[in-house]
Length: 258
Image (cartoon, rainbow, N blue to C red; front, side):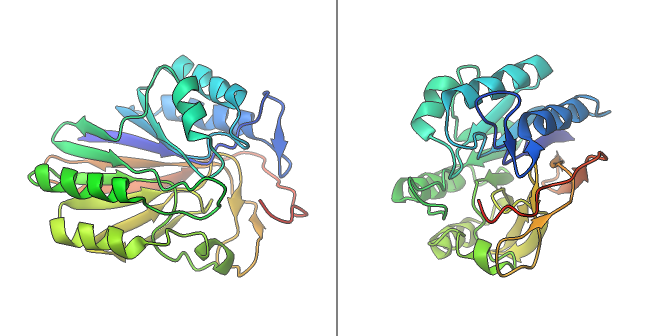
């Protein structure tokens, strides 16, 4: 069995005291990471699926890298809509962006769904071409896909407007190739899963604060920071779940949007 842990939507600021929605995002990130390091089965890879920074700043990326390196966990990352992809590539020197990784017999694909200046997601022609080519070349290997935006509705109208707007092209590739065992995303700040395109989509909660599920308009939840674990087995099956930290946690419900 090989283990990956996914964290997402850190929303770090320029210093350790930065707050968003009443939450010190660096502190919640640090506590999530500390819990991960204490797992009985440590992860071989920490997958960070975007919105590392609250506003795409170099200082936020340096704080992120310093903390992950201190935890001594191999990590990979991809950008979210609040990130600056070019700046990330220059700032996160310990682990360059790498869209295809091998974990034993498994293949791990990262896709960039972020669109500059937009909260919503889209997979560009290059991303779709890379996905299709890789899945066909690696068709004997079970594969998982990570990206920031969800390709499916999560049941919240305001968030569903930000889903990948060309998700059908994504689905066509997955159905044509048939070796993807799961699609894992962030962005929606809540736990969710649904069958889709011959596989399953899993959304993972944030390391800082969560959005209330099932709301047509913006609303916050008091659910605690969380991460997702994935256990990958040699027979091509996987198990996954979400762990919420147990901690005092009170968000600012007067926040009108983000």
